[in-house]
Image 1 (cartoon, rainbow, N blue to C red):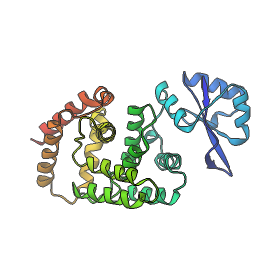
Image 2 (cartoon, rainbow, N blue to C red):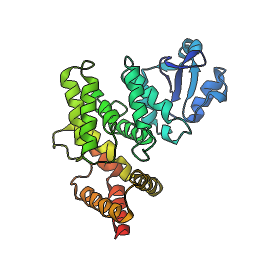
Image 3 (tube, rainbow, N blue to C red):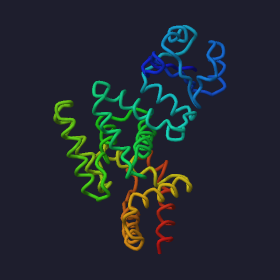
Image 4 (spheres, helix red, strand yellow):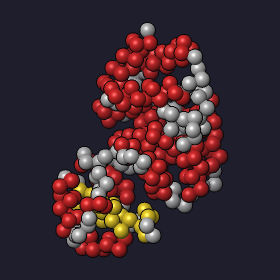
Length: 289
């Protein structure tokens, strides 16, 4: 089946929808070809289609859904190509996500994107933010609670390489920025969730805390090449620290992570990432001696 979200994303003097299949790329190409859409509009797992043909595509059988529902369809189909694997697309993917999450607050989104793109960041960068949001999609079928998504945006918004302090400063920033935009209970909840990323130890009944912590640690359960890239970028984040001091500190972090029981708190998180994460962490620790 073919699905289409509302025309929303601006480019080339108009706004665009996304056209996807829940079955196969071949089905998507066939539908697009029948509608006269050029393959130049195809972007790995979807077609970008202008507003002027939205009604035509719906009349031809494309099912209209919200942007969030479209993401859920694409994730469930197994056809989704993660935005961080698309050259030069991280910024636009994050912009789209922010505009969907808080469309009435473009200035705040721009401020946060600026923070995540600070030049001293290597692992704790916009790529990590996007990967975390994509992990939340996996854990929630593309529909994370708003407070959890906002906590992801804020969780390393302040990053100076000082464990514990960065999380606290980020939590304070979240509450300061969101006061007046959200109900006081919501802004306080976002700040609480941000603070959890210092320990990754939510209470047993803290469902939202479990989602955020698991998404933040999903990188630990990546393929060996992805994990090696993560480790290299963490080292770059601490380039100012001598090798001996870094290795000692890193070994302590690895032991702390391996001691977490459970390391992942959601059922989906354990299934997706736990075995590979323990293997990756143990191998790295052994290499550090």
